[in-house]
Image (cartoon, rainbow, N blue to C red; front, top):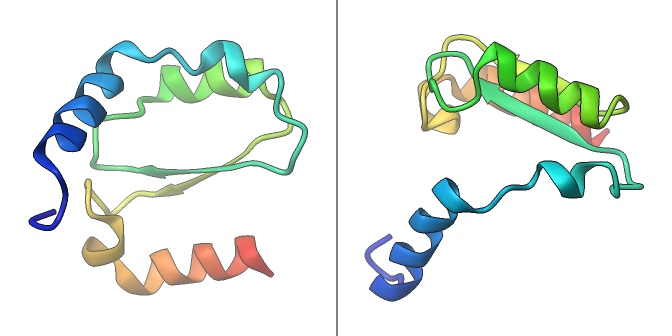
Length: 87
């Protein structure tokens, strides 16, 4: 992130707390996946249920052993999930 403009980082961070994507979910018409970090504590089980209700076609994958940096915390499983999704 050292190469990012500080203003962009600040605005992106604010967006995590203020942008509500839930209304947009019903408008998605493409195949959609959500990869959840089991130890991330960002997307909780109740969030998953709500997202699934709003977009029943979404495929939710969980990487139980990973926190915020999924690709580092469990590289092998992360790549396996991503490979499956892209296959």
